[in-house]
Each structure stands twice: as structure tokens, then as C-alpha cells.
Image (tube, rainbow, N blue to C red):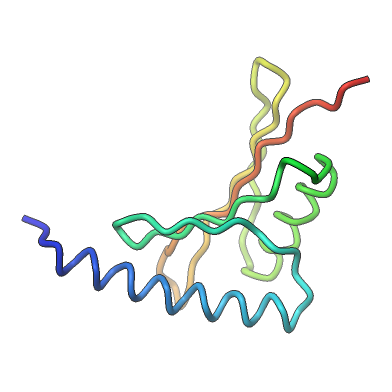
Length: 107
């Protein structure tokens, strides 16, 4: 059984990792992402989609993936969206993911 103490420990570890990632982002001029932290300690960095264009979202995820040394997977959806996803690891351990949902631009 997973206790509350485990969740707090996992989240505290993820919070430390997020702090490291944000410091690196500033140092390397990476685009800001929206970060979420799950109870399991998994981090998800999502490209901002309200004001950013699909090209800007793609560039943000691509830049972060390159920095993290990971590969972006692209999935075409039936509704015209393109989903971008990349796993995020630190010291050989998976800690989360990078993602974006690219919607077709209105003509």
C-alpha cells in the first residue's frame, strides 16, 4: 500500500527536479512551459497553447527535448490535431513528459 508519506516524498523530489529544470531553462534560454506535478511525482511540461502558434508550440517542445536529450513523438489525430510527446528523464530515471497539442490554424 502506498502511503501519503510516499506521495509527499515523490512530490518533493519532483519539485527539486523542477527547480533544476527551471534554472537550466533560464541559463539556456529555453521557452517557458506550463508545469504540472502529479501525486506520483511525475512532471509534465506542456507548451502554452492559448497565445502561442502551433509552430511556436512545436519549437518549444523541440527545444526542451533537445536539451533533455530525448526524442519527440508526433501523432496525427483524426480531428486534425497533432500531439507531440517526449519522455523526460534525469540521471537515467524517467521523471515525466513534455507535451503539446497542436490544433490546425483557422484559415
